Length: 111
Image 1: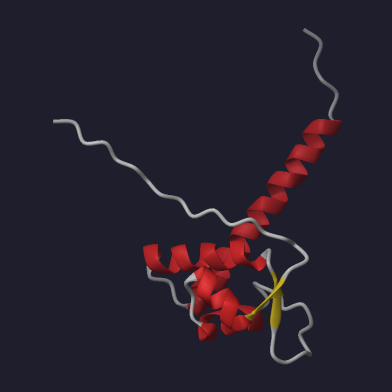
Image 2 (image 1 turned 30 degrees about the vertical axis):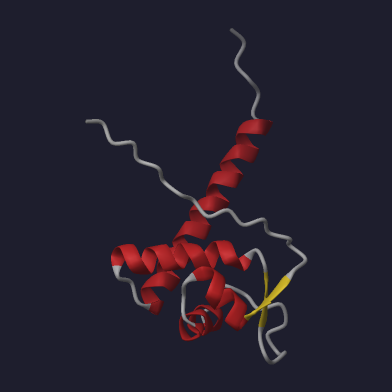
């Protein structure tokens, strides 16, 4: 008997102009407010205005926060470990973007 497996994926449309409170970000990401605060304190996710209380975050922070939640759950990382992992992921993304730009500027070999 063949069993069909269906994987459900959560889809969330992100309006980059939308801001979320710390509580809303925690609800959408799966992280606790304390974990998010530690990530914000380390600079991995940035509040809209660091001097404004309570903290609010751009909706795009959901991506980093959900990634952090998966890393925490899959690899049992604590907040400092999440900071290192997210920093390295962002650095790899930056380097990949630079590589794409360099490849786009490089002359193509004639075949």
